[in-house]
Length: 419
Image 1 (cartoon, rainbow, N blue to C red):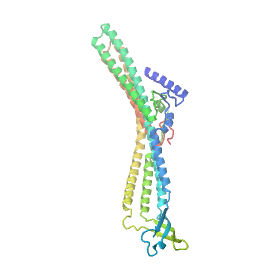
Image 2 (image 1 turned 30 degrees about the vertical axis):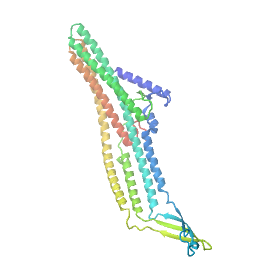
Image 3 (image 1 turned 120 degrees about the vertical axis):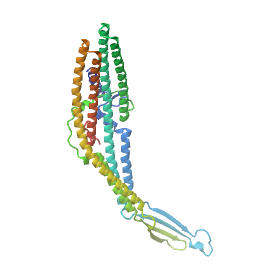
């Protein structure tokens, strides 16, 4: 139809402009091809938040390697107060260093927990990037579908205008009642209002795409068709559920929770403080060496509450990992079935539209010849509009299923690995 031809020409022109103009040109408002847009969007706030989580985990892991700091103490005795009975001669000054010594493998447990935290953060980062790529693809396709709905609405307005001209001619010739012309005018007004709604929906879809992509300038069009690219994509094979990112995240978080239990258990072991100092006596000819050891007695605090809390967190993490595995197994089976169903639905929608186009053509010929009433022509055109909408809905469902498959495979909708 005319709308399809216009869309193809606009996409080709937008692609040419995107290739000739730098990606950062301020006046260029056309969204680049999806793969390029996804690469450019790696510095958006949505991705920066994910990177910040990994940086935080690295900082905590680095801090976990730190050893306890020593403490410097200076003591002075008998330098004031009652100085009778030669108390002044008993004045003494002590310079002492206290060094905490961690026992029970606390530092190694902290280091292992820090490394596990980094692994969990990296797994969440990858999952977040895949979800972002999925959301961006759906927004890109949503803007494309909105553009196609405008084309369909323009086609319907064009056809309704032609039908109105025929109705007016028949009314003027006395072959139709004035009521038929009014019905055709009402139908045209309805379709024109739907066209304006479709244009508003396109602006909203492009605004959402601009926000997701982090573009300060709203996009006004697209430079490629994601829906057309799906026709060339080969069918994907089976997916290993254990390699799905949600499972990897759950497993990494379970490992981090297990390491946290070990840390809390090690904290129940008391630390020792080694003391070494020099004491200077006023009446002595030289300094004296003092040394000592301090060990706390775990009578009241044995860290049992923190250990129980960490064990409960581990139990929850193990349950979440089991749920993630079950969901991944069900999801990988379902997504392949949904892709096949979406492909069949798209093929059936194409057949339905061809039938609706032929029915509308015959209805219009019959109406122009005065062999059928206007109501049949309006019904045929309505069925054609519904069939066109079904094709778009089928294309959207097909893209959504392929997007889910790409996410489970660790890829973007265009086949690039997401890292």
